[in-house]
Image (cartoon, rainbow, N blue to C red; front, side, top):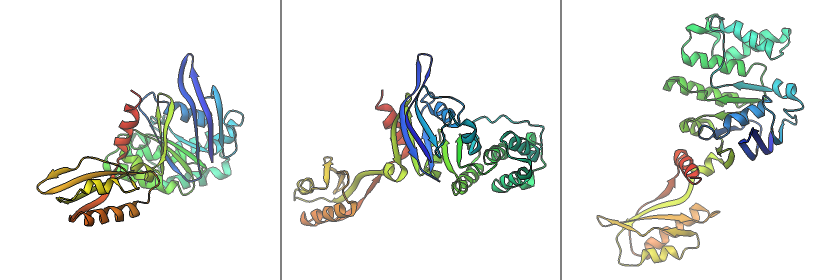
Amino acid sequence: MIEVQSLTRLYGTTTAVKNVSFSIGSHEIVGLLGHNGAGKTTIMRMLSGYLEPSDGSIRIDGANPVGDTRAVQRQLGYLPENLPVYPQMLVADYLDYAATLKGIASPRRLAAVREALLATDLTKRALDPIHILSRGFRQRVGVAQAILGQPKLLILDEPTNGLDPNQAEHMRRLIKRLARRSTIILSTHIMQEVDAVCDRVLMLRNGQLVLDQSLAELHDSRALVLRTSSTDAPLATYLRQLPQIASLNAPDSDDGFLHFELQLHAGVDTDTAANNIAQCVLKAGAKLYQLQALPRDLGTVFREVNESGD
């Protein structure tokens, strides 16, 4: 669906995006993360055809946003962080106006507006002026204008910003439904949103792509926590001899228990490693009380990635 190669964008002498490459498949939900100034907005604007790259290439479903801007924008839906709307307009009228701007032909326009209203659960608010809507419903209006015409690509910039927990949960469910027919790029500062809806994450730092990983891989720390009874046998020595173990910390002793954190080599089968670890515990004559994966959260990874560049 999206192929980005060596993308670079300069503003005068300032490099906003530097040599970024990635690909995104159809119906993926990809989180775009980074501190303010990391290059997220610049990348989204280049994907939309609003900005031209200084170097590199973009292909969206085979089309180039630079040479085929209209072709790309016809299959693109974009929700900016602060959507400009006409607050006195009725919801339905605003969506009809947005559909006109998108070039949706008159015979198809009414059906497109109806589809967008149904998808965002706005049918009962279609004749309400936008200015009387809650923030949550205004965000839905923003999503509705983005999905007019069933675009193949949706770019959503901070779609849950300022929403209460119930509104945010509704937005998450909506995004998951939209992914059945669209590829979605979600830019946000809220790690919980990425965890809740995304398949993959792209992290930017100082205009460069520093991490491209699935959420499942990101959460796998390749580490296990082990708690056993104390033993006179050299359990740590037995564990270090296992081929699956890359490293382990010096065991902590607490109230007759031993606590270990074991780091596995990349590519190791976790179940095989756990079985071998359990055998070592039995060999040492100890009792096994805990053996489980040590999860890694997205916030921790984000901090690690950004601190590594300081």
